[in-house]
Image 1 (cartoon, rainbow, N blue to C red):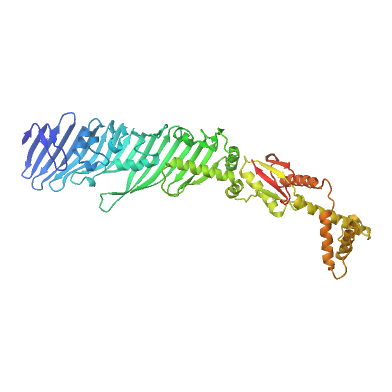
Image 2 (tube, rainbow, N blue to C red):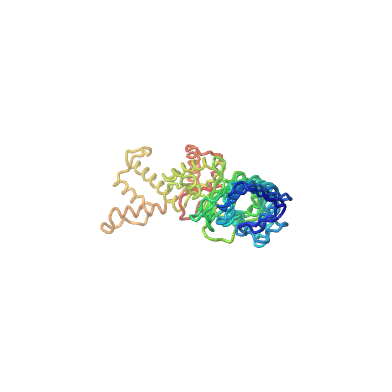
Length: 559
């Protein structure tokens, strides 16, 4: 037996010698030495094992008790620690301790290999250089299924779990929250194949209002290893947290090289905190509005569901007449106001939240400027902004009767939407038809006077008799006109000329247009009641006559 009271031990793959207080070597047989190695200072560690002389193999168990992390980092080659350099290894930048129970093996060819689990209590890490402004504090951590290969650190693997992590990142390090998983993966020690974070906090500086994620739980896991086993081909990650002053957030995605494909959801969120800068729209502030939001980076789009609108007008913006109308257009019968949005693919200097804000704003403006198109697409019922009347009559055309049915269905799906209907007439379209009606009435009376038919019989006038009566009425109203000589015009041409002149010059009743307009008003009121449209949501209004050449339409205005 050989006993050494103090000394140091150098091992291949360990950068610094290991000091010890007691080394005991005991010869058990001709080929085997029992080894007991102890270090009893503040960083206590112990090794108990054996050395096979003929095989040159050292094996046994290693116990570490409150070993300084800074000492450990100094002992391990730097290429094991991604994103770190010598600036990060001093005691004032890295604190904390580690305890572990590990199996150890060593031979001259393979060097040192450690396997087992480790854990540590509270500590902190302050980064500098290109990562200046990033700091981390933790309450405890665990390293499971760890394997450290000193001769080839890139073959080392371990699963890291951290609880009570408080991570702070300056604005110079990360531009936005959704890019942070990329940076986190880059600064992880190379041997970490999975990271689990529990009950933690992440603060990302961003202008006057930082992004503070509380009650953070998540994971970052190497999805595959390359054939060489030295590089992680892809990482999958997921996280959920409470974004302070906003709401709950869920994030999941995959990292592959420089690609970061992800989806996220904001649930029961509020336009406040770091989102306050995105609360102004078209002269209104929507600060405090409640919503859910989802986004998929591969599809470059998502949707927002507004559940509680908070609006206040702060300036005049002609681009939007009423935000209440916008709300009514969007909100369905379940109370949801779901709007899909799409972001144009390609690189942009703007952070993702701002790009989403602009995309939703553009979508809002499209809806406000083309409300009938939006309602047709979103409800599945094509809706037109006009109701076409038959010229000279109160009744609607068949297409407009269908439009009225669609209006009922649209209003059922948009319970906050109301309607103004301007009941119109057209001098250019309705006037000639009203004259035709009066002309036909006069012909019927003339026919009844010259035959045995009563005016109320409404029996059709024979065509030849009608043509004769038309020419006689024409001549009677134009005293100096003569019927063209035979051969100059055909009978049909003479009748057409007479009818055209009579329609053009037929005396109009002073109130015939007004009567038609009132008839249309009463007809629309009756038809809407028949269809089942709530009269409390529709206001009918008689408007002035349209300009000459316009159509005989009643116009719908959403409000």
